[in-house]
Amino acid sequence: MRDCLFLVADKNIEAMVVGFLSTDSFHLKLGCNHFNFEQKHDLRVAHGKNDPGIYTMANELLKPYCKTHRRVIVILDAAWNGSPGAIKINNQVENHCRNAGWNDDNHCVIVIDPELENWIWQNNINVCKELGSMDSYEILKAELVTHKFWLSEQSKPNQPKEAVEYVLKKNRIPRSSALYKNIAMKVTTKTCTDAAFVKLKNTLIQWF
Image 1 (cartoon, helix red, strand yellow):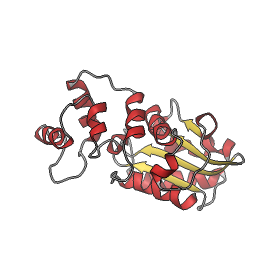
Image 2 (cartoon, one colour):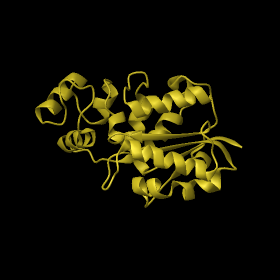
Image 3 (cartoon, one colour):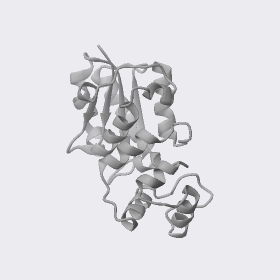
Image 4 (cartoon, one colour):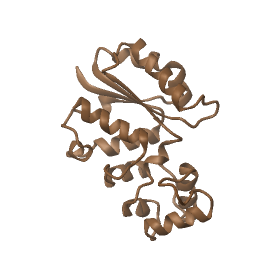
């Protein structure tokens, strides 16, 4: 049996997970003990189905793996057309995991509210560099506040995806999955305050 299966909604989440777990010392970065992770065996993407597909049919996607993996983590966004909201998404996908064969101690559902880009925004110079900005994080935040992507009193943009797209467009950098992987490989996990990421990190620490 392999340690853990990751089912993710799209290629950008895939890239972020690979970025976090592809270095030899990833477990030290996350604060857990080492566990085996190989992208080929332990990561599946809901190609063509994305967030709504996982919400409606995660059990079908997961059933082939309940005999090959001890644990499962499902990661998807809360913001998509027709979304019922993060709480309902979480409850539905948890039921899918149980239906597919994992008990409550061996599955974890991560609903990023509103979306993956929330994991990008943390006070780290590598974030600025990957977005093509020569400014400090504070200067970049101030610009995004001016353009209404960020409420000044908040630690994260209120429009995280639109904020990323704005900065990339300004700096003439195409948005790609490589961006997410590169940021995940370079930033620390200690300063990411997003609730979904904290849940993911705490789950890995508990399991491993």
